[in-house]
Amino acid sequence: MSAVQQSSFSVKKSDRFLHQKRQKSGKKARQKRSVPISRIPETFLGIPCKKVLFCVPSKEERTARRLEFEQEKRAEFIKFLAKTQRPALRAAGITEKQIARMEEGFTPHGFNTHHKLPIFGGGTNDFSNLVLIRREPYHDMMHYHIINPQVRGMQDGQQKTVAIPDPATPVFVPLPQYKFLEKWAKKGRKTYGKNKNTSFSEVRNEVSRRTALLAAAAEKGR
Image 1 (cartoon, rainbow, N blue to C red):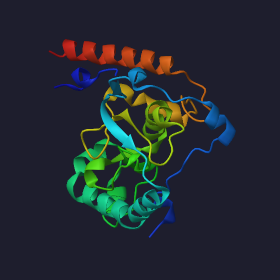
Image 2 (image 1 turned 180 degrees about the vertical axis):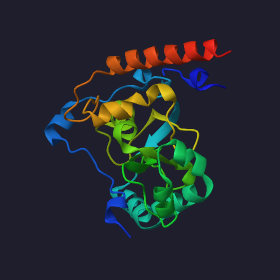
Image 3 (image 1 turned 90 degrees about the horizontal axis):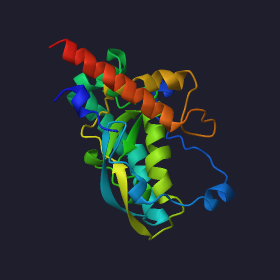
């Protein structure tokens, strides 16, 4: 299946990964309502969205699982990727020098090890629940537009069915029609965060335009 057909819209301390959270005003966050699953698209950034049960564990359990991730599992996952996913890592924009550092357990600068089902929702540190993804823009967009709006305000012990982006591979490699988002992010054009200045409709329009160009080029090459 071609890239166009798949589209549906749908050691240095600097190398160490720090899971950065967007800080929000507590009062403002409480005033927002969660988004129902019915408003979540079937795909996001070309990634299928899967329905899962989001169960908020106790704070103690979340802390223990996060500590396990920080101290052991993240480095183990990064080493695993360096040994088994070199072509995908190169396709995602990671250099050979960075891959060599990954063999020692270091995350490439600008990338996150993302939990598909967040620890806050009962997600584990199993490799099947982890994916390496560029933080800006893809990881931040995934949380801002899809995950966070559905689980806003949930407390310990609560549960609900949500839809989460579910990349099929342990390294997220964006389809060609979404790569422009990396350039937009570098230029400060963002649909997420406190300083967002671009609407998601602009993203959809640009994806549609680029998808059409790719389809035309593929047709011409036949």
